[in-house]
Length: 96
View 1 (tube, rainbow, N blue to C red):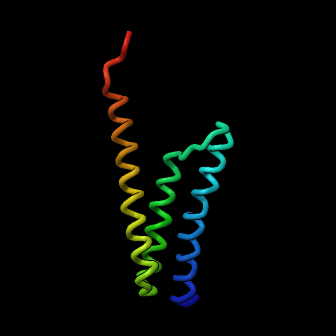
View 2: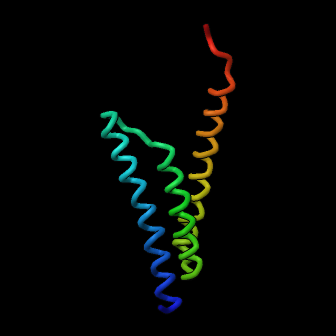
View 3: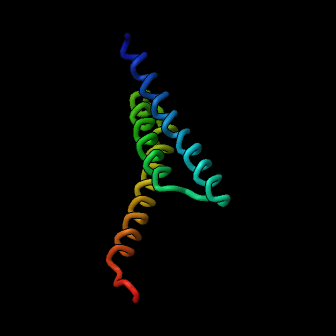
């Protein structure tokens, strides 16, 4: 197996994770019969995006690099907001 073949495999793996996030979102929405974006969507976006970014850097593709790098910032920000909201819920006084 050549280095090139390994990198192509890495690129396809990143793309598969990135595509899989839409399947997760679709299933979550179908289960509730309304649009939902589960936290796993953002994790899959981040991990798939970072793997794809790594592949783009290997390929030295500035268009692909910039798109994946900017996307990663958005995914991290959404995860921070989700976790911040969870902490607020867990630390708020219960109402009786």
